[in-house]
Amino acid sequence: MSEIKNQVYRDERPAEAMAPFHEWARTHEPGWTYTATRILLTPIVLGLYRARSTGRGNIPATGGFILAPNHFSNMDHFFCGVFLKRRIRFMTKSQFFGNNPVLSGLFRIAGHFPVRRGHDDQEAFATAHLLLEAGGCVGMYAEGGRSRTGGLGSPRPGIGRLALESGVPVVPVAIHGSKAVRQWRRGRFPAIRVSYGTPLTLARVVAPTREQSLAAAERIFDEVRALYAALDAGA
Image (cartoon, rainbow, N blue to C red; front, side, top):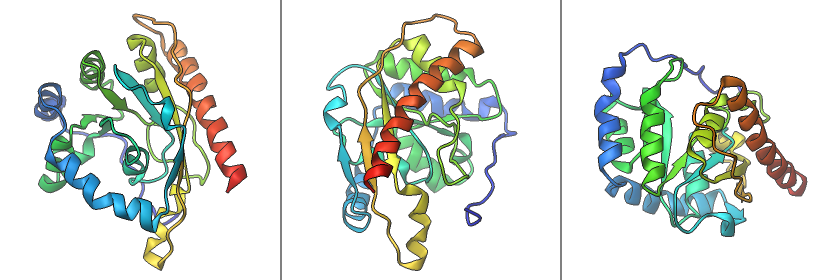
């Protein structure tokens, strides 16, 4: 795991720097970069990484829902999205927005939106709620960031908060094998397995406490852990 750079959790830029990206996400559907990236990466994901999935029937055909995967690699966006007809709007760390114009444009036009980790980012949740109310799919990593231990991390309260406030179904997702994705530099491409779990709907809470949010996050991530354990046993 030493190959992975240390994560930057806190973005020191002002909240106003993210306003244009939230405005775009709230007023635009995912654009051409989502389609182009999917066309480009699908052969790589299905071919080189031999990605396979189970449980796709658990994805709601219509209506807003939250997709809650575990997180080892920046490729996880694509591993969990390649099998779905519905487009995922990921809540993504703000460092991907506004620093590199190419990467920033890719994420913005694809429909993703920033969260300023290390801050109480109300705008990120406001954008997520608007997308869910419009019937969209919001992707949110339960652990908040990539796990650095080689195993599953611990859930952050944000996923629980969004689930409780919105009352929409949450689909737990286990992505197995992506912790070894960086071995491509040695010519090795690990087999990726993705399992979509049964949607979990929590009783709606208008203003959940941190404790309630964390308890909800743990309940969601327990489902992810179970799915991951089943994939690990079959690996």
